[in-house]
Length: 144
Image (cartoon, rainbow, N blue to C red; front, side):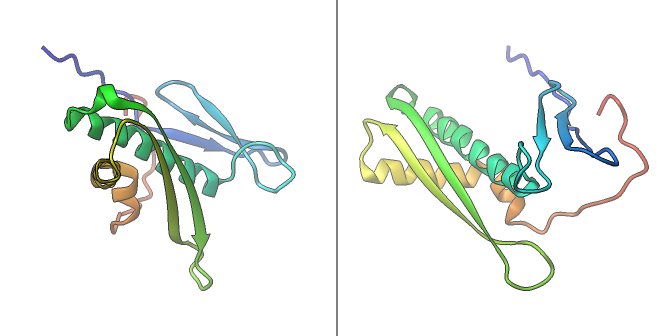
């Protein structure tokens, strides 16, 4: 029997009137400082978005390797993500470049299959390429 553990999917971003902000995951309490200007430590919101895509893709490669029966051959996977902002308005990202390094005994064709599958199952990537709705609500419940 599979034991499914449900985590909260709520993240809070907080910015005081003066000083540096932070984002915190409700599920774990993990927090990252928000960099509003280049001289501040922490990650910018765009870097967080790049990190979300890179993180989802590395996990998706591992899931794909498991699904394909290749998990024992997967030594490691690294994905570098770089975004390019659109030159016109509204302010947005126009493109993400993703560079995969997959270590293990794989042919070029198998590496390509892992990357293809990773993109197919990556929730973050699928969201970024879809027409997602962003809603404003009065409050998100504590148990969400």
